Image 1 (cartoon, rainbow, N blue to C red):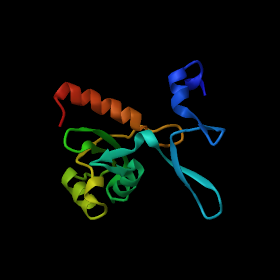
Image 2 (cartoon, one colour):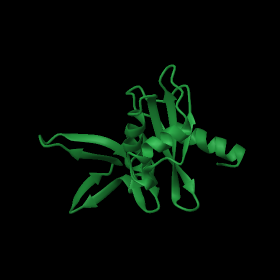
Image 3 (cartoon, one colour):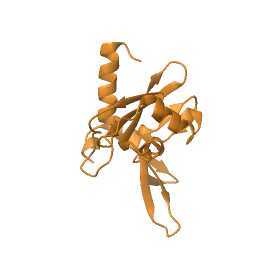
Image 4 (cartoon, one colour):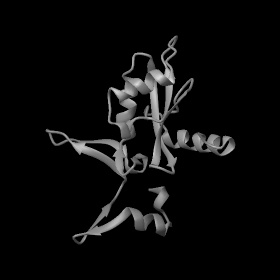
Length: 154
């Protein structure tokens, strides 16, 4: 909760009164299973909006990670003048594997709706993850924005 201490703007966005009760809006997205357990699956701020459609990065990452040549995948949304955001994928190939961008984009075409498919693929030696093993999309986004600003974008 350090991020909210003495920060009125952040408090206003995160704490709400609903039906006379105070709620903390964490920004987490999840679901409740048939046994009543809750599972956090995404962060609202990581959701990508492409042409008005919501895209959950984890869903795209799971499809990409299911490819035989992919060890790990990270997906982010970046600003796009036509669709609002575009999907960019970062791929860590399996040792000895050499997937191509065209190969992965074709794989995605058979697995998901057009608006969910990455527009660009970047290959990396590793994908930044937290100590819990979650993809650090914030780091990927910062690096991509830095690269876009220095190269003029895609």
